[in-house]
Image 1 (cartoon, rainbow, N blue to C red):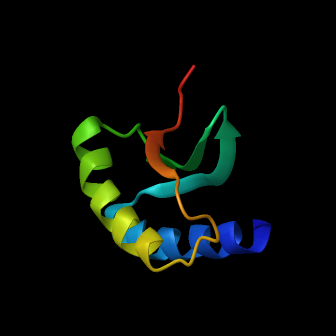
Image 2: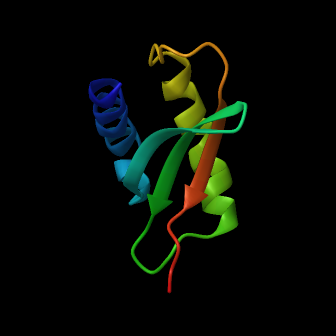
Length: 83
């Protein structure tokens, strides 16, 4: 799974590069009965909600063809926390 996630991160970074969006992390985790594929995005100066929404469209298209070996999971696209 680590190799698949690393490959996915590379593809996402290339696709989002023009918008100057940084793919900070791509992870897969299980919480209770739910499984999450989380893509954490960032941008110099911060990333706003509208940018996350637009980036999610691109992320979704790439994830759809990524052959994630899990049948059911929730795609979670989030911004990197500042603090």
